[in-house]
Image 1 (cartoon, rainbow, N blue to C red):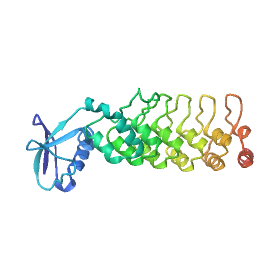
Image 2: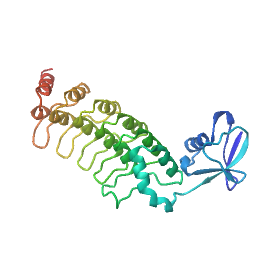
Image 3: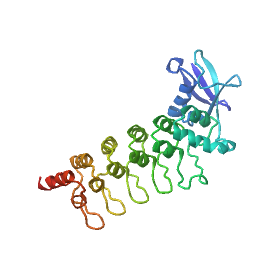
Image 4: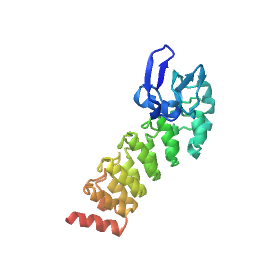
Length: 268
């Protein structure tokens, strides 16, 4: 058995060796089931020595757990972490989170859009980095200065694997930007079918309207994405919603194919 206690001696958990392969797995278990913070802020000690995450757990032992705060001195490295997240440098992101660095750190002076690490990784389609940041406790709904969330950013870029991770982590599906646009509207506007389907399956509001009254269907009509319009109609999107100027999706259609789709739906 592995017995884990706080420095005070209070027992945190007692776990069988057969369920855990290494220190990393133990830290993840302590976070998921025993109320400890993410593994990056845990330090496990054995006989006064800190155990690395890759240390194999092969014999019964008593361990002490130390919870560490984010390293304020390491904030000077935030640009390096930002770059690593955008480029998908998983090794460097892991190393810097282990300092530990705050996964929600943002260099406001450098980037006036207030883009977080999670938004930056989502924007660049770095699914592995996104998963790591979520494991570190990054806020999945923290938005930039324009109100764009990581989910909306991933939807706009057509990054289905990233979007799936964010949905599984519980990101708000219909969190709107400052202009009222949702992830579904962004996917429709850009013609990203796979992303659109994931959002529909997650229960996205089909007829949500932005500040100009546009819906996802109106966006698909304006941008000429016929297959997206078809998917929205099949999902039950309201073709008769009007924008602030009184225009419907049919009135805004830019291609004959979309006009035919909407005209047929009017007669059925």
